[in-house]
Image (cartoon, rainbow, N blue to C red; front, side, top):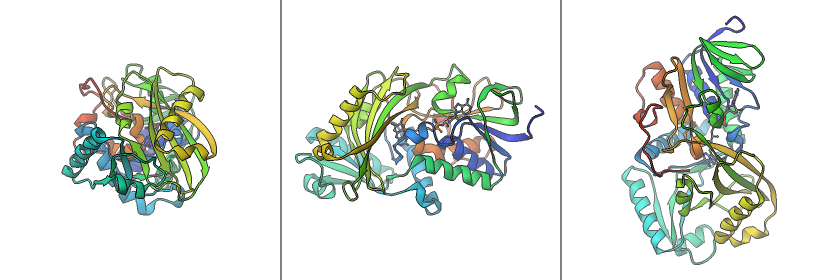
Length: 377
Ligand SMILES: Cc1cc2nc3c(=O)[nH]c(=O)nc-3n(C[C@H](O)[C@H](O)[C@H](O)COP(=O)(O)OP(=O)(O)OC[C@H]3O[C@@H](n4cnc5c(N)ncnc54)[C@H](O)[C@@H]3O)c2cc1C
């Protein structure tokens, strides 16, 4: 492979996951290259909501999201303003007594793992978010959840990596090759180890990977400072995220530091066009307005879509690729890749360098036996 130096690690994809892996690899002293065909952070990362959230669909998901949330908290003092990191907390909304019991069970699960969580009754909820419709039963507040602007966070990791000697190579990877990667334009990148972090496009390199694209819509409003204070999510979001087959929508609202409000979210399997679908967008907005009717009076700026990389058990693939020596996977993050990028990088680097990891890596190894059934985001 004569065209480039021999890198210790070449990473395919400069989304938030690839950039976080690059920062971790460069910090570990490894000669690191990241290869990206588009704008770094411009793929699904740019389409995401940037909710840094603890999720408890499974013990493994809880462990990964919480570990990564704590890593984000460590990064927080260093994040530039443009990353718009804000610890606004999440309000998990309960419509009725049945959902309130779910919220209480969720609170107990969080607390049993040392994650702060408190219950708000109907009055306290109305005081916390006055634009919510009356009549909701209450909410669970996860005060340590945060929000950020994902493409800027990806750039932060890439800048860190480059400051420590990593190189960004602009080009389209065509295939894995012995000792490196072939680019579409004929160049070759030689590397001892390859990390596949191409998100929903990872199956282009390994068609057998258990990853399916799952389309999502988002919409952003004009600026309304002080209109919304927390990330506000209906508890039914978990059902929406769980569904492995049906199209679904759920109320999921995010306050940006700019005063804009991000409105989500939808989930679709089998959709291949990136076009905004008016029917799906209308369903999503109607659901949001069921919880906050005054949203109807706000101006929207833009709507868009993105493709999550979904695995059957809703856990990412982090570790050695089966049957591909020297190839590692950091992909399949579905709706939690912004949250879990720092933990993914830490777990991957621990495996690659044979150092201990902070949480067990087994549930995320690519050769795990996937649990069938329901899971998240
Ligand atoms: C609507 C929506 C809302 C979301 N909300 C949240 C949220 O609130 N919180 C959260 O944690 N997550 C959220 N997510 C999920 C999150 O956005 C993803 O999990 C995350 O961005 C995945 O990052 P990635 O780096 O794996 O993939 P990507 O960002 O897609 O990066 C992969 C990169 O690889 C590059 N690439 C692909 N093929 C090649 C090739 N052949 N050669 C070179 N480069 C290549 C692409 O150009 C791309 O830049 C959301 C997703 C969607 C769609």
